Length: 102
Ligand SMILES: [Zn+2]
Image (cartoon, rainbow, N blue to C red; front, top):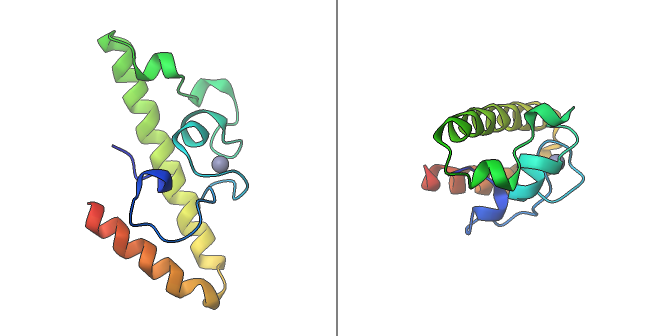
């Protein structure tokens, strides 16, 4: 569903969160715990919201996830621009992995 590093089996780099760069980029970090992606609780996705059978809640949850992923891609691009050249090789591998997943 989401391009989260933890879920990319062919991802060879570390799992450092692309947004905060501190915690591991796991589903729980991205959806709920990341302090860079979530300034307050309104953008967080809880386990209940993720696994609810209420379609109205599910729609809201999906919208939140789309917003989170957009923000994650955005911060990733910003970080890439300031990245040192020595990291390009690893980055390239990760991007190839992304393309295979799409
Ligand atoms: Zn994070």
